[in-house]
Length: 421
Image (tube, rainbow, N blue to C red; front, side, top):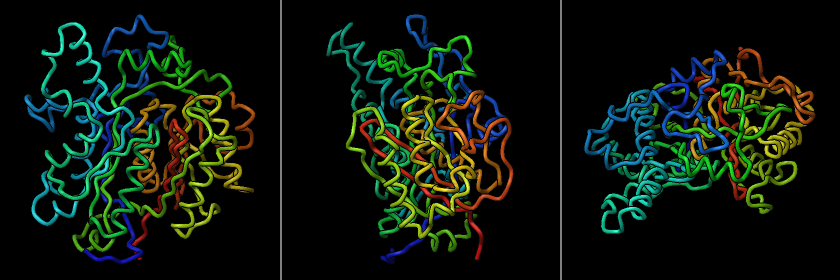
């Protein structure tokens, strides 16, 4: 592999599993149509909870990528990621099982907030009720957060750099950004990068409820996630996964790949302010964005739309809009903003990766999905161009994707529409 200092990184494949569909095309179609994937919780009895709604990936079928034995030995978070990654490989025109030099040159970075949460809860229940000698020998390899990236190697053959990024709701975007940096420095030619989360579980929903972080609009699931709206009362937890195939430009061209977009810039920062609240004015996020612009050779005036983090919590939404006003300056009222969590819910560690995958599709299709449930914009949204009502059609060249996590960890991606030179 070459060691060129300015290797360009492009996106050649996309895959996603969300509450709107078992793959990215299904998700995209329903997202653009303004449909919601949030509904009453179906995977367990939620009657003991204050919040009884979620975004569940009910159409996901992990048996498409794993046999019966492997299904019993992998956590749902890993299963969702394998589905998204297999789809992304096919979308990129790559084999479903990598071999030879291509396998050696392909790595996997997968972000997650909780890792194998369902496995942890199940095994702790077994430990309490039946004792330590009844714990599964697969408990540890199913639960540890790095195992999803490891299983991409085991199941799909990627033998290059492999790791997990763990930064709460910034995890998926961090994985994509760090994967791009891995290609730029010559440590891989292809990276399978994204995020996954499967935390629609009574214990975790209950824990977020204890923080007063979740919406309790149980009688109106589709209307519960309301970024930037005065009526919002918290976020809606969801599960899902997304994977992007990233390649060095020369490698993609050499194999005749269809190029979807360029990952032009990536920035990361820490607020160093509070465990759960964002810094005032999203100052840390603004610093991350400025780093992304500097590395991309772009300016804020080049942004054509924003995929907002926009969880539907008052403090988070307010800070993000303030940061966008500072960053975009006198164009803040003319840059379309979309919030996919209004339709999907908050997939935590997968959120930034899903936002990135949807943004690439937006650049390719010339279409920005609408933000749902924005009936009464709050004061911070006044004058901002939040896309609502219907999808926005047009030509969009540069997308900014925000992803922020508890702990004050921020990740910003800049994606550029691909035009063959």
